[in-house]
Image (tube, rainbow, N blue to C red; front, side, top):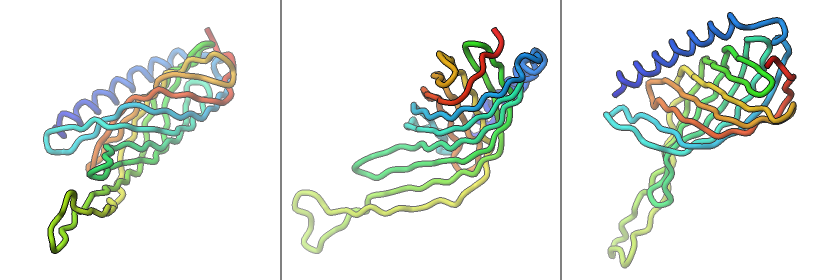
Length: 201
């Protein structure tokens, strides 16, 4: 499973590189106005257990982007995991710096970015207690948190934003993080606010 995930991620990077080269080649002087925005999103995500199966989770993200011409610089953090009120929860997050390319028009922004990330996580598990006299209905339990050591990762993201105005945008935010602890990926609905020049048609 890890080999398949790695292959898929490499293919994604190659496709993004080819598309990015196309975007850079199409860049014109009129596109070199600067845009900046901050956004937040939520949606489904998936992570690999590294044991031949994946889990579907829920995630949210906060991302900051600065675009000038075809160049895009960004920073992001994502939080995703599987949550259970009875058995505890498990979550993984990353903080990343990204660089990529963007295609800007009057109505939309399409971008692809990649960069280094720091990934951390934790597990909260229920520990069931056994009283000396046994349990009457339910055994009492306590929740214990287990932290995970931070690891390095490769962050990937793509944004497709539609701009109804110069200060707000809505769209789709796709992300991934490749690391040896727990690789994850997802796709979010996002809302962004910032400054968007008119750009080209």
